[in-house]
Image (cartoon, one colour):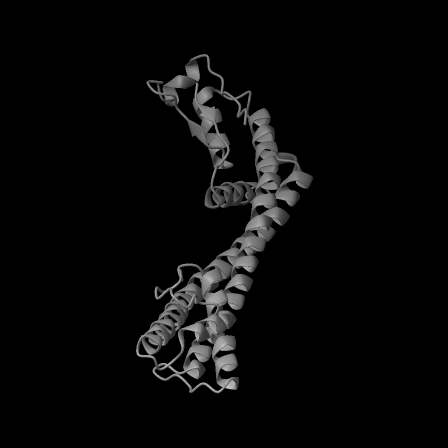
Length: 248
C-alpha cells in the first residue's frame, strides 16, 4: 500500500498546487468537481501569493549576496588600513618620532607593539574610531601628522566600511523578513494541500486500486512505496487495496 507524504520543499508545494489547480480547471461542469469550489479558490489565491512571495524572497536574497561580495572587499580594505596605521604608529614610536605615551590617545598601551585583534566587525569599528579620534587629539597637542597612510585615508575606508555595514544589515533584515513570511505561509499551504488530498481521495475511493492511484496523482498527490513493496499496475485493480493517508 503506497503512502502519501506532503511536499517538503517550496518548489514541491508549488508543483503540487499547480497540478491540482490545472486538473480542477479541466472539469468545467460544477457537478464533476472533485474538490470543493471554496477550497480550490483558497488554493488559487494562496498559490498566487506564495509564488509572488517566493520571488520577492529570492530577489532579496540575491541582492544580499551581491552586496556581500562588495562588502567583503570594503571590509578587507578597512582592516588593511587600520592595521597599517597602527603598525606605522608603532614604528614611529620605535624611531622616537612619536612619544610612546602618546599611544594612549589611540587607546593603545605604550609598551605593547602588537596590532590589536581586528578579526571582527566590532573590533574594526572600535579601533577605527579610536585611531581617528586619537590622531586628532595628538595633533591638537602639537604632534605632526602621520603619513603612509594618513589618517584621512584611514577615515575614508573606515567611513565606507561603516556605510556598507549599515546597508548590509538592511539587506539581511529584508531577506529575513521575507523568509519569515514564507515560513509562515508554508503551514497554510500544507493545510490547503492536505485538505485537497483528503477530498480527492474521498472522491475516488470507490475506484479500483490502480485507477484510483492514477486519478489521485492527476491532482498532485504524492505517493511513496515502502522498501520491497509491490508497485501497483493495471492488474492491481482486481486486488484488495487501500492507500495510507498522510499522518504529518
